[in-house]
Length: 136
Image (cartoon, rainbow, N blue to C red; front, side, top):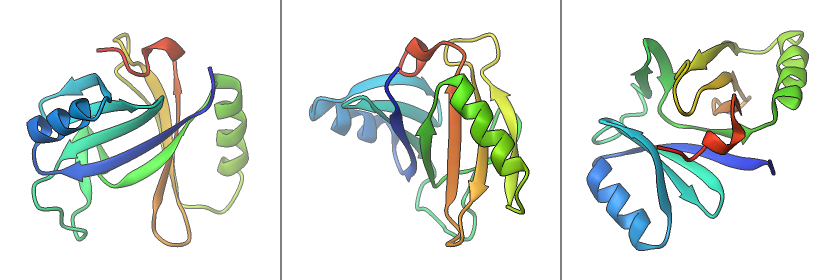
């Protein structure tokens, strides 16, 4: 798997956003009622329905965990992901402990977040099956 970029952005309409991106040649991936993954030239953009985005409340709930709506990140192979996670765990950073999402489903992945000095949330992901990154 080559390294793919991941970006998550709020949107006001999943339907309108999906239509726009497929109209410019992107391919839709996994989706739910309030979010959709878009494959834009091999890079993953997740759009989360947030209505008019309010930076004072920049979170959403996914599988019972509160996650930042606005974040970006990188998808890594498992060995690289483990190395980065262990390295960052040992530093004095605002690190959100790793979680497994979509367990035993298409798109199962491990993920953790770290906040940068500017307040941006950076996500590191590794998929159980790398070919599932854009599967429905």
